[in-house]
Length: 96
Length: 209
Image (tube, rainbow over all chains, first blue to last red; front, side, top):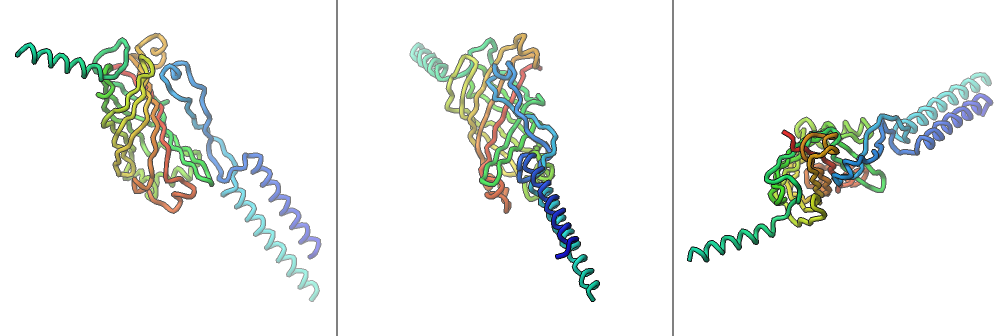
């Protein structure tokens, strides 16, 4: 393994680690979400009507393991693999 | 003889009146409540070891008619549109509306039509708990379903006017269904989506005309 190949692996690992940390910080959800449900504070009238607190929808992107994190990590691995192969062949050609 | 018949009829009326359970509020007689408020909500909840999913619709419409002093007289229906259900993942909402799931194009509505009211418990003068049996229709299939319902009647007041004119009826209902009973069968049912779905309705209706 030459230095370029080592550098590619290092960059790929850093990119995957970053996206995994981002995923964990985002809540570690399995699926990416386009919104969240937020519980509303119940009004006095709703209390008098015997109703339970409700949830309201708010648009918010939450990074999930699927598909975004997995697809990004997969793409990084795929591109790194190709680059490693390219640099390997160049090395062989240079030797010849 | 006539006196005996009259006494018997009076007794029968008194006995039936004593069994009639309803609200002790200012309003009397038959009242019709419209459920058109945009805050009205129907929630679907599925739980599996893999994932909990909440689907919510705020596109709820319906009408309920009841005799204030006899809740067993209640009739009416509540409808939601399938297209309005949101689960917090747009792609999943698309799947939910698709042919493989609820088929919103062919069966655009989910309906609960009241058939009878039983097991009435008076919680307060304006609050009752009951088991409401109705026809629940989803995915073009109708099954009789029993819902635990709490009904709260509020006479028109300064407080209720802030929400809507007229008397208000609060409805908090909960029941469970099995998707397989409604021909919603899919590879994911039983894995990522539970077969048993808990349905909760939080509704406010007004009798203003």
